[in-house]
Each structure stands twice: as C-alpha cells, then as structure tokens.
Length: 101
Image 1 (cartoon, rainbow, N blue to C red):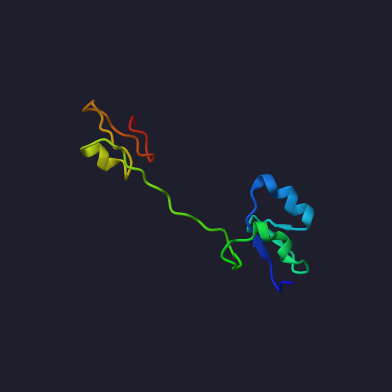
Image 2: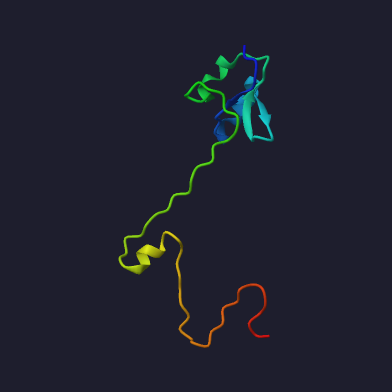
C-alpha cells in the first residue's frame, strides 16, 4: 500500500481499463492516480518507469526546425518569417490605431 497518490501515465484509449481497476481522475493535474487505499502494483503497466511519483505534468520545450534553404530566409525560420511590403506607401497596422485615420 502507498501513503500518497501514485500518478499514472495512461493513454486515452486505456482510460476505461484503469477506471475499472479503481483508478481515480485528478481534474487539477489532469492525470489518473491510484487512491491511497489501493495496491499500486495492479497498475504497474501505467506507472512511470523511473519508480518515482509524479507531482505535475512535464512541459517540454518547443522544437525549432530549420529549413533546408540558404541565405537570409534560413536565418529567419528560427524567429519567424519576415516580409517586406513592395508598396513604398504601405503603412502597417500595429493594432493601436488604424493607419487610415
């Protein structure tokens, strides 16, 4: 028996299986867990491989993919695409005031 919640890593397709075994849903952390009064070995299939308890979801860093193009456009892919107006009289709208007033 455990003395605290043991969080599980459950794919959506298997949620009904862990629910049938007695797991509970933690709406705050959005994860399934083994209640304190239950044997967690029944849920070994869904327990983290490290053997430690998870306290919160893991947030991963975004992946920046560089394009295979060369020159300035390849450098812009890491920060976004920058375009320039071809009309010299163009006034960009910055969101504060419309350019036509």
